Length: 381
Image (cartoon, rainbow, N blue to C red):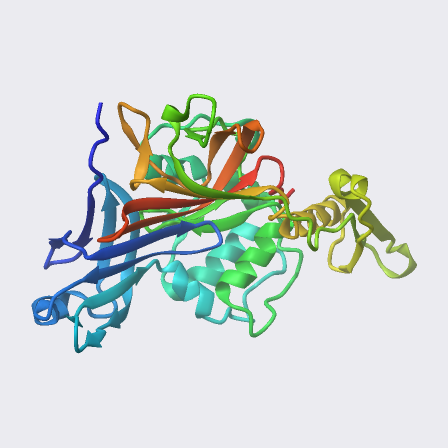
């Protein structure tokens, strides 16, 4: 069965609803560590006059791929490049509201005493107009919106995140000017093994990287074993130990007064790095970490942050979606894939997809780039 054609469309929200779909080029990025965005180009000399009112900064858009919502955001950038030979095109960039949190300073007066992480996060985002209904505490909802598939609960998702962070105390760690709203929220969430990222419907997901789920996608790059199954155009596998610690030790202090406050010491190590005879111990002093669990989480978080190139792939594939031979499945972040390559050793195992970039242009057609990490590397707790 021939591959079905991918459909990309962008819809203006509000009273003057309209659809744009004739793009000379487009790039849509979903990233668990950055705001999602869509960079779009429409091209001829008369385009600006036709759509000027539709691409003013602040204009709200929804981006769809194969009729499934990809991102919800607003125009942040207009660009009108002119060329004596090629004429002109119109370019504009849509970003999610999470972009505001990346640049807006957090209120240093935000309450941290006798409150919970959940209330602290809501208070941080309140100046941007966010309420509790703008947050999604079940990350499977966002994943299912992107992929159009119903995902099962993995072993790692055996808790309700909303209830969990309702019980977590903010540990009196105040906002540290001039940190942004995003950075302040991220700092507190990561202390408890959590983070936040964009949902395609404009909400903010609270969760953690879940690489224990079953893979949705199967990727092939074989030279000898059934090469007709290949769907990878190009790929780079990296095994990079640069900067990865052999051990991370975090020192904190337990709750108490005077001499009753005892020093806490928690250590995590990387057996692969130690086995390769790299000696890189890291020591972190964090007096605000008052329990062994928090100190160990901090050590694991630091180890993971420095280990993302330990076993990863950058992969280019055809189309804006995964083609199984009979159906198309949109690519989604916070999902997993299984990679097979006899050039790289056969069944490479399960990898976690944390960034997806979809591209359309006249030269290359439709392509997708995935950034993936080996299962077990990204651990926040």
